[in-house]
Image (cartoon, rainbow, N blue to C red):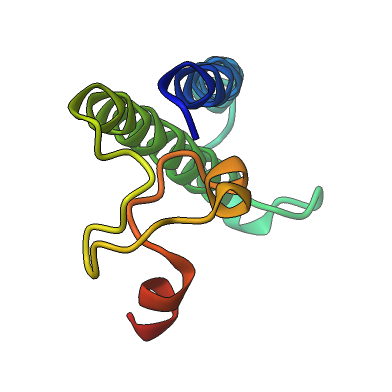
Length: 115
């Protein structure tokens, strides 16, 4: 994969992940705001999932999106260093299909399966 294609792939993934992180941050703010008006006993909430559960779930998803943004930044650094698409474990190539699915991946499928 050439540098231009790799950077385009990474930039698209970064934009999509940034949008997801922004949406999750808004959702987090809404949950926090909504919890200000509750009695604090969300364990017996007839609506189903507790506010604490929703808060934890959104927080985990937001953290994952933020981690992915960092990983995509590292992927861009690997492009500029000329090592994007090279497995960090075995030194072999990472398939274009794997990079398309996981632009921030650092390992080939064989090494990922061994981990």
